[in-house]
Image 1 (cartoon, rainbow, N blue to C red):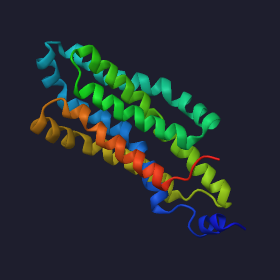
Image 2: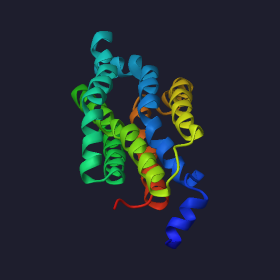
Image 3: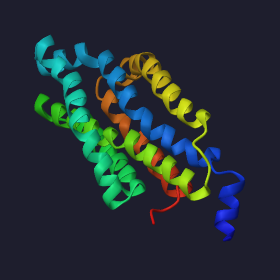
Amino acid sequence: MSLRTAKTTERPFPARFVAPLLWGSSLNPVNSSIIATSLVAIGTAFGVSAGQTATLVAAVYVASAVAQPAMGRLGAQFGARRVFLVGLGVVTIAGVVGAFAPTFGWLIVSRALIGIGTAAGYPTAMALIRARADETGTGIPGSVLGGISIAAQTTAALGLPLGGLLVGVWGWPAAFAVNIPLGIVGILMAVLWVPADA
């Protein structure tokens, strides 16, 4: 038995391995709720109607629904960790695009990118957990699966007060710019704590 296998057998799902996966899986729900606090300010800034600002909400849902199955397949083909990191990179870029958007159309592009990037989180996290369980010969602990579910629900609930605080202090661009540190922190955690793909 290799040293690495012995270590993972002792603690197959340490907190450092699980934390980046929880982080990445939570970005979609938190973005879905944060945007709600900025719609009025965005409509005023760009002179668009409430119906038009609603497309910013729909863009994430549609992009996520289309991209999530594709991300799962890409993860199986190219490596779940690689796709997980690419997704976080797309989220970071989307934050830059949205924060400095010169027109309302660019905000829609940013939100679509957020939907695509965050769609990678859940399927690749589940693939990494499954691979870890197979490698160590253990089952998937209920606490890990429950943690992912609870993290998604908790961040969705926290998104509204967080978004209200961000928009109240820095204006509507903050609802997009927050994805820059969220994406970078997720990338750093995944690079440091999630084993590389075979």
